[in-house]
Amino acid sequence: MKLKFSRNSAEIFVPDGRPLNAALRRVTHLGVGAHQDDLEFMAFHGIQAGFATPGKAFGGVTCTQGGGSARKGPYQGFSDKAMQSIRRKEQNQAASVGRYAFMVQLDHPSKTVKDPRNTHLQEDLAMILEATRPQVVYTHNLADKHDTHIAVAVAALQALGTLPPRYRPAQVIGCEVWRSLDWLMDSDKVIMNVSGQDHLAAALNGLFDSQIGSGKRYDLATMGRRAANATFLESHSTDGASQVILGMDLTPLVRDTTLDMVDFVTVALDRFREDVRARLRRQLGRPG
Image 1 (cartoon, helix red, strand yellow):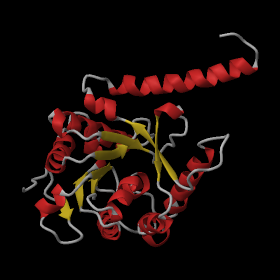
Image 2 (cartoon, one colour):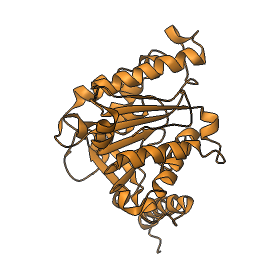
Image 3 (tube, helix red, strand yellow):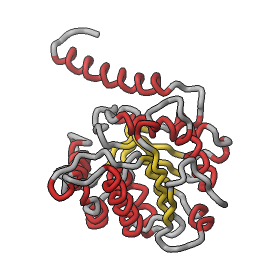
Image 4 (cartoon, one colour):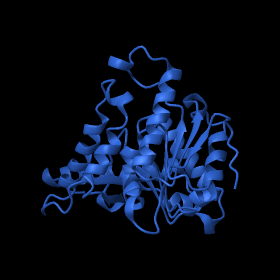
């Protein structure tokens, strides 16, 4: 199968050199992230599954160019174009270290991704999803505070909705990056235990020197968040894991494409609001 993306600058990298069709067919877990490094921070559950499990493989998609990141130190004088080149190489290095089946970099400008009238990203993602038909898809959560992340999540869900129902994944997970998901009610959380391979996680996170060297310690913050999730997940029992990623279950939006994304998130927020309200009112002795 030949994939013809909307931007000529898009590229596909197959770390182990297999034919593209073979690489596409072996994917069981697919990550769709906005920027270079998002996959490693949010979709490590899928990377871990594909790293050494027979019959499973992780495929990665990075949607944007990534040239607008903060920079100082050794990268202070780098142009956006130079940063885009460096970040693309870093992402391909991560694909090699993580043994991804493939790594697609679609190279869309963030400005066009955030334009709801532009459907190019949605069409590109639909093409990838049709070619791979993964069992699990990881993307950004719909309560993220980064506009580009939200735009990518929306495009991914819209693309999934164009597939025939029999080709849609069994699970779609919205993951943490620019907002933690510990506020979700426990019944709404997807709890991903990623303990046991901290060395692999650290190796992947540490590859993005253009970010770390520019003063953003995403590597430390990511592992710290996962450790905090594991410890603060349950107050009345000992820790059952050392590293946990929390997700928002977006599967209902794919199973029923008539559901409204705004209403879907608002319901989760309302459940959180009511839980906070009820706990406080009980402590104050107020009925209702």
